[in-house]
Length: 211
Ligand code: ADP
Ligand code: MG
Ligand code: MG
Image (cartoon, rainbow, N blue to C red; front, side, top):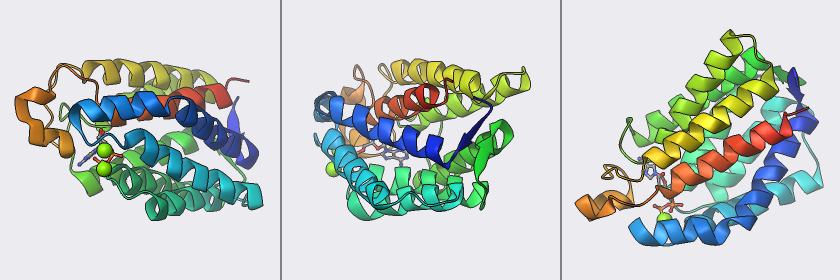
């Protein structure tokens, strides 16, 4: 795909909800090792609420759609992940503006702004063992692929691969942000749950933009 229109963005969001539902127990298992065993439930509750909104009607512009996703996540998820994912989508929407579709450059700018919003909110840095460790390399890989001539679909596939590598690299890390940081050294040896859900976000973006 060369660009994502509102229907394609909605397809991405619905795919994300579906895979979150499918992997809910795994995400909770990851969070039970280094957190409070609710990441799967938090994400599933939030994405179910988002899809319920989209079922009523999909907004006509990309920014309204992304802002709806963000506001619904902020208001329906109590844990750290609600405000963080909510901020990602709200910032993406603000950056996209009232357009009917996002081309590669538009999606790159939106993703970058979303990542910056997560950092503004949670202050995570590389290696803190958070969702940032999957998202930052994914956004970088998206930019690099675009610069190399990839379309949105291929750039999203590159981003998904980078997210998965970033997720896997969280395993040996000692957490420095979020609940997992309370465990200190005992947080090492487990994947970060937020990095795992972020990888699903980019894998579903790649699937939704594949053709
Ligand atoms: P809670 O920790 O409140 O129970 P969740 O379990 O839903 O919330 O989400 C936990 C995830 O949130 C972590 O795995 C981590 O990826 C992410 N996270 C926590 N704090 C931060 C932060 N300050 N910045 C970025 N991500 C964070
Ligand atoms: Mg938790
Ligand atoms: Mg919690």
